[in-house]
Length: 92
Image 1: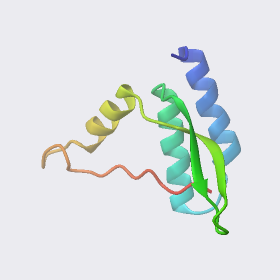
Image 2: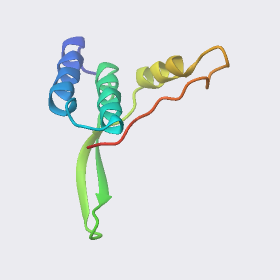
Image 3: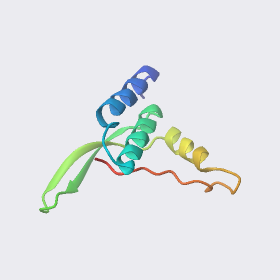
C-alpha cells in the first residue's frame, strides 16, 4: 500500500504528464487517474490488441476499495445512490 506522500506524488505526476492534453474526455481520464492514485489503486499489467491484431501490454491503475467507496459517495445524491455518474474518461 503506497504511503500518503507516494499517493500525492503519483497524482501530481499524472497531472503534469497528462493534464494538458486537449479534449474533455481526456481531461476526465486524467482526473480519474489522479483520484485512483490518491485512493491507493494498485497498478495492473494489462494486455490489449492493437489495430493490426498484435497483442501489447501496458500498466494501468486498477481499483481499490477506497476508490470504489469514493465513487459511490460522489455518485450519491438526493435521488439515491446513482444520482450522478462518474466518468472515467478516455486515455489519450
